[in-house]
Image 1 (cartoon, rainbow, N blue to C red):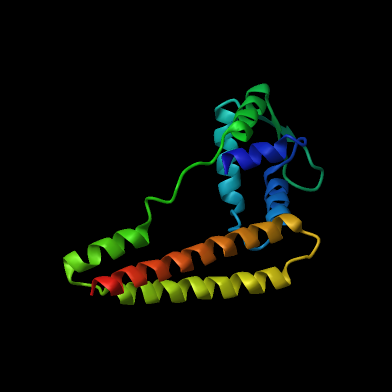
Image 2 (cartoon, rainbow, N blue to C red):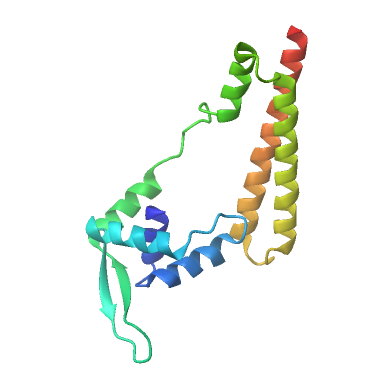
Length: 171
């Protein structure tokens, strides 16, 4: 959450609730929405680490609000983040660990695990399809997020099929 908030502040100063709304509008309903408390805690940490600065702004009919802006250090951190590539493969997969250990424990059947996981992925794909249909057509970012998630799920379903074929050959 740290770096996405910095990225939003690169556009200009904002308060926490504004940042929450910006994230929700940008990413749509498929992305897990942070609660405003989480955003303010993160903003406090970013301020403490010198990546942003906050300024109290008086409001006549409401309590004061704190508006945050990016510091030079925050802008540098943001540049570094955009330069990094994401190369972490999904080698540490909880489901695969269950699949690998099931025969050793005698507590679960591997094919049953695969079938249960397949049902879960299919249910998730159905939910994502409904979200895509309900999402504003003009929000391309939200649609790309949903499409990416569905492509990952399809790859996971293909991998489950491959696992099942391999395990059935061994029997």
